[in-house]
Image (cartoon, rainbow, N blue to C red; front, side, top):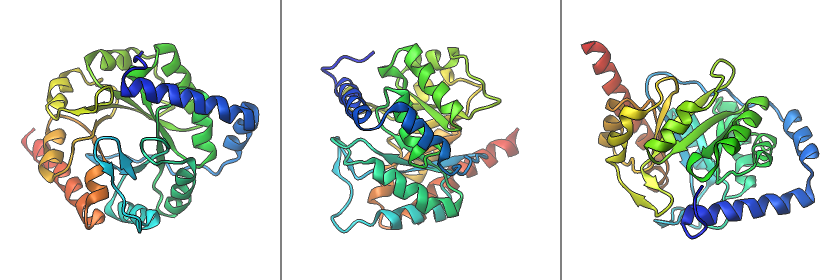
Amino acid sequence: MSGASTFLGRMADASRERVRRARLAVSEGMLADRARSAPAAPPLKLGGFDLIAELKLRSPAAGGLAARSFDRGKQLAAYARGGAAAISVLTEPDEFDGAIDHLVEAAADLAPHGCPVMRKDFLTSPYQVLEARAAGAGGVLVIVTMLEDSEVRELVDCAREFGLFVLLEAFDRHDLERIAALPLDSDSQQVLAGVNCRDLRDLEVRFERFAELAPFLPGKLPTVAESGIATAADAATVSELGYDLALVGSSLMQAADPECALRDLLAAGRNVREDLRACS
């Protein structure tokens, strides 16, 4: 869907090449066997307003987000103690310094906390969903705008088969309409609809996109505000707009006390929900 000249297009092309190389080392059948034998991931538990905290070592827009002495395990533990509903782990290697190994480590570290991990990458093939499940992930992110509807359905169907939740990421109204039109079986699978206010086609952040697209959010799915959320006021704003979760990466990675920062974001979003319920 996205041209190769854009950032998103380049990422999609690189993702397809990684799949091609991976298949040479491990067949899809062998990978599926590994996915089926992996321990079950903790379930995604939602209620009121929730946070997906992100482990992101580098951002193409902001540069490096982790010092040389950065301790991934310590950061993950802070997220879990802070009350994250799930933790997003970047696995894209070239622009985000991610790796599948980070997903494996996170899944093992967070299992005792009952907190699922989500693979965040530029997924183009069900093969990558199998990689995620084999690594211990409980969910995957799918960027709708860079895929055809048939490709999105393939990824969602594979995730359903292997018990993963899916965050379908949108950038505009057309993406949200495409998500709403998908034949989703919400009774058997958790599917979330997200709006990313950082357009990965040009890396521009427009916080106002959350308000512009709020009227078009699919009512049948939990909704996620992604990117651009740095303060308690930001969390309160997206909660008031009707988003059920926020996905927060850079601000938590740069926080001196990520556990405290996460708690503050959660409290702000939940306070808005409580006020709205009191007024209704």
